[in-house]
Length: 114
Image (cartoon, rainbow, N blue to C red):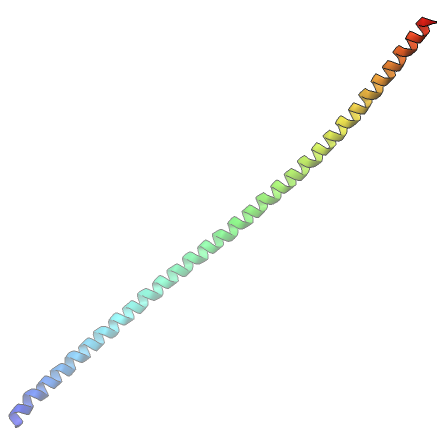
């Protein structure tokens, strides 16, 4: 019976050794995989941070441009209102001049009739 047990013991030792080697390889592989995942995560995080910073800068630029447009539109609106007011004033002056001229012409016609 000892003859049968000896190969079983040897086989058991060999299989334990192979299992240990496989476990060591699996642990090393999982550590390398973990490192790669950490590196990928850190790269993604830095890319996201960079994109976030670019987005914030873009939003700030958009806000600056929007403020410039609002200011320009407001200034143009004020200029247009002034121009409209000037047109109304000139129109009134023209109407007054025309009325004055008409009054003078009527007065001359009246004088000529006398």
